[in-house]
Length: 281
Image (cartoon, rainbow, N blue to C red; front, side, top):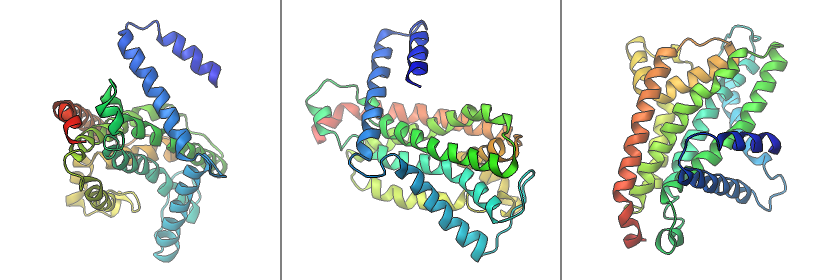
């Protein structure tokens, strides 16, 4: 694996990119690696904790909705039982957990590093990106487990898995954009991380993650798809991993544009207020 990464890095060095950007990318890679190592340092199960956390949420929601509330789901190529609902739910939870956890932790990323802000010449633009990328990489543990379970259940691996980067890009842009906005504002208003918890809880339940989008009243369904990027992202995740065909290309395109605009807007806000960080911290 390290050999592949080294070859990719060597190949990337030939691309016409400013050496200063390469230095920042190398620094970002080191910070993400350190963050992931520190997150579970000293624990017995180490990097298995992200997977265990995601599986525990999967079991809780599957029990409540599939067994207690008797929510049934039928998907092409998968057996019609409670496990199908669990796989479908897990495919929607993966991007949501990476998104919501990334935004919350990015919001505190600047105030958690006052020494870097005040005493060291450091590219502060990297700070909110570290938790966003760490949590995204952690979610790949769950993704690999999901792909394995789908392969065992359906006896097939869909070729549409190669299209996953098309949905990762808007997910990362949206998470990083909101992370920039809230990381900057939290320096001046410390209530923001707590407020985010409430807002994201509401956002979670208006996004069809634990229930199918088909049960949303028809007059509201289009609005939920077009105005909520997480709806398109989670639905396309499910299309690519479980079904093997994408039926929401238009919605994903709109979500990508919205995510790009939020990223550019968030980065602009962050850079505008960044000079005042050292005076407040």
